[in-house]
Image 1: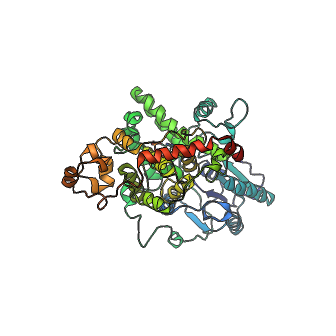
Image 2: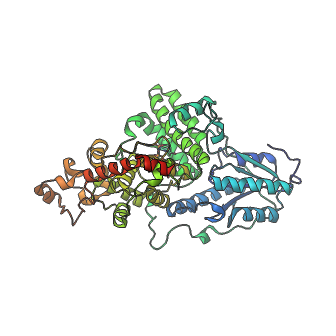
Image 3: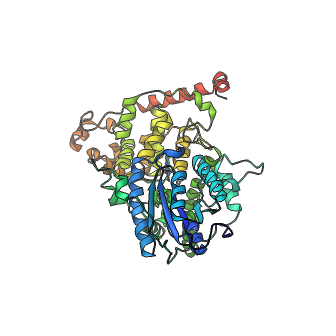
Length: 496
Ligand code: FAD
């Protein structure tokens, strides 16, 4: 990889083009650039929807601004700085290469179709100009084309995928962060981060995010250290309880590449080796990292995962259109406490617990019969961890249209789910404060509470808190009937 036969002398800089890998540790492109002996131009391009790439959602833009700020500070402590440019990535990269007389370019690989197309074309054009170009595996433990079924096909089912992936060999050890890097002799012009206006201002709906999150590499390190010290020992049981801080909350850090799956893998294994009681929890946790790998496997092999049904028979699914119901869902005003708590957790913190994501997703798609793509787009805009592979694959999983998906006829009952996983109602009380004084027996079903209990809790249904926008039993039956209609031979043939 470190072939320097092309690309001018070692005085010509190397451009390290960062994308979803905003970290210094375990960053193979940065390590390669430092080892090349050339001065480093560390570049981030805000492509922002040009070049066929999907525009970042609003919450992700807030995270990105803070992550880039942290990365620039980290680079400055080792002698570098971050160069920011905006525009179509191929054109901008070309301009930076020309302006700096760069002799080499490197990056870590990405796995979405638009990104791959840009990178493949750039590899050819830059090499044709005599530059040395290198790309690296950094953000997935197992690149999608390296894991195949016995028949040589991509996997459609998680368990055999994960078994086959692990059987290809242990993930490599993480790389250390560079201690020092050489900057180009002439400073490279950079946009000002503030000029990109990534964070919201009026209103600043993201102000409270800092209470829950510290974007950047140090924040990601702190999250895994806390999780491995306090959370891993009961992860397998507690990970389904939304009222407990029992999962790692690493997802935004992973989405922006502030921590790598290799770092997570080895740190987790080390803790499990030291404490045998943690072993099964560690395996469960790493199997969730495996779901992320599987999502990328799917996205790579089925590039339109965010827009097209994985199972084409769902193309004829009779979705209904109900803007008022969707608005109530988005605002956390459906009258179903667990659904509303989840949607308000998302709005106020930029994140939602995994079990609740499944429940609000099922409610939208099944009880309200709304197209899963409506939910996918809302999550894309509001989640700090919005991830092109995980979000698309998970929504299709919820809808039943995906690979290895929840069967369509399995409709989550949000009341029973609440009573099982938020038994004391603590999660609902936190995010739906108007119900806070209801006893646990009614907190997930306030419409069944006797009037004296409602009065004592200070709740007038229809005023302080809505009645359910759909009768749960009716919504379930309607969803099952819609699904049944898919199974008729005519529809199956039409959707093939
Ligand atoms: P942990 O339980 O600590 O898991 C560690 C890591 O494993 C996560 O950070 C994540 O990278 C990965 N992971 C965990 N569960 C899953 C899963 N079911 N599928 C894929 N990867 C997983 N995750 C995202 O990162 N971005 C999304 O945009 C996203 N959208 C989702 C939409 C829906 C409808 C659903 C049901 C799930 C979605 N998920 C998404 C998956 C999951 O909910 C989150 O990854 C998880 O809640 C993040 O919290 P954590 O980091 O504490 O998870």
